[in-house]
Length: 45
Length: 155
Image (cartoon, rainbow over all chains, first blue to last red):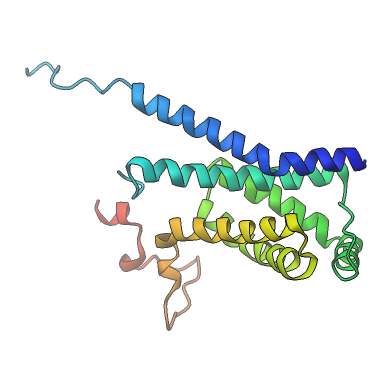
């Protein structure tokens, strides 16, 4: 149990940092490469 | 941008929100894996043991899981931040002033600073609460036009 506690102590700081960083990098990549919505292609053009 | 933030700041706020949500979820679920972590301190040790014996400690851990999920998955974040704030204050006092080991001196202030920072990031949601003289407004009464949501007013 002591070893498990020590393992969880290390993960306490690392896990949220890794998770948040991976998700935000994913969001940045998604926003960077998202195709802009088509404009001016309507029937009236 | 509709959420009031743009550019890099939007990602910064998202990162802090995700960090705090993941931190709370981790802390809450850890309780169910390892149980209460023993605190070798003459004051904090019996305090945590008493919280555990009275069932308050498991309640706090369950609250951490619920508010952590709300904050991580972006559901009613302003409410979750307010619910979590008293817990963050107690953690700060216990870690920083009472236990005050090397690790606790960092983790205590971090908990409070991140919670407070997120409250600042979502501060506009709390402005209606800062009403000096507030007449009662029960749920069962009609909504006055001045307190309707902005999107409702623009219709």
